[in-house]
Image 1 (cartoon, rainbow, N blue to C red):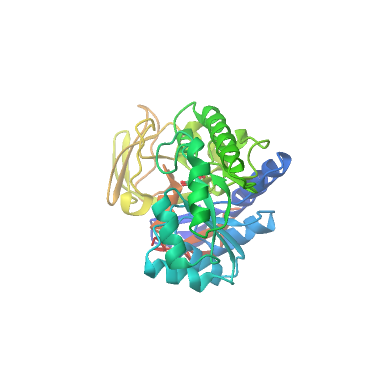
Image 2 (tube, helix red, strand yellow; image 1 turned 45 degrees about the vertical axis):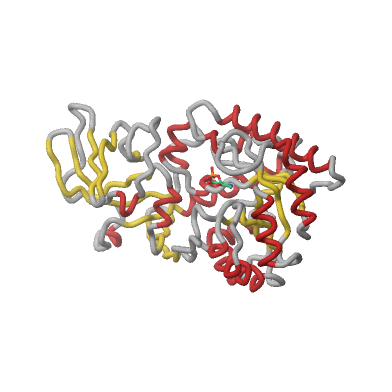
Length: 358
Ligand SMILES: Cc1ncc(COP(=O)(O)O)c(C=O)c1O
């Protein structure tokens, strides 16, 4: 561990710049090869410096989850944003959207006639353009693909400009399902785009994408992809096989505070790492430098890690890196990220959209 960090209180989040830049370049190249525009989801990092690097590498715009995230990134000068969420636009949110109009091109998701009417009433007709959300198998938000035309027609009647369709193939987050989800995504978006054509609109945006399914995203059907987690990767992506441990750019640094036989306890818990624990993961995170260890329990300030019998465990007081299961929830809890280049801390980046969840 670099000396200059020994005085820094743990736990803290650190980004390996070389790994981050390689991840950004690899996804940009992968999108280009398939003729897809790349519109990365910036909820993963909430950092201006990282979004600027993604745009410099060829991203055509950015994706956000909330109006508040849009406000942060428009304020910083990002010109082209998609709020990939069926935002319920009341008078207050409508006013906030109108305040962004003219400063950036804005797209927003709709998945109901009522939502489209609220958007038109409170944000106006020219503030944002619309993508109809369809369900491709994740069963969260989105209408059935064949109903995309009906919803596009209702949104048009409400005075909105419908640019196309989108989906999130979130069922890629299950072992062995990435290719299946990408296939479902392409089938759903093809049906949805045809349904929109059938009412006389030509969709110029057909948007999908998730990190696990990214390498299988269909460039013949989709026009753009919106992966987010790929910039950092995390323990889930390692266990799904989307990346190797060496491709994980963000880890939390924690101190060993307790040590018994083959078990250690680290001073990073759910208040730092987030508490996501899908049933199929091996534990509450992974240690990139000890891949045989299992994070068997987590509480607010403790991560309990066990090692195979006979393996030498880290000493009391030692710094240990831990990859969270889901990196977006870690970032959402952090004020800043320590940026590391070849083992040396070189800068700090503010999590600019920290708390921008409305
Ligand atoms: C609507 C939407 N688009 C894109 C993404 C990015 O996918 P991933 O987190 O797998 O990178 C997400 C992630 O939750 C999402 O909800």
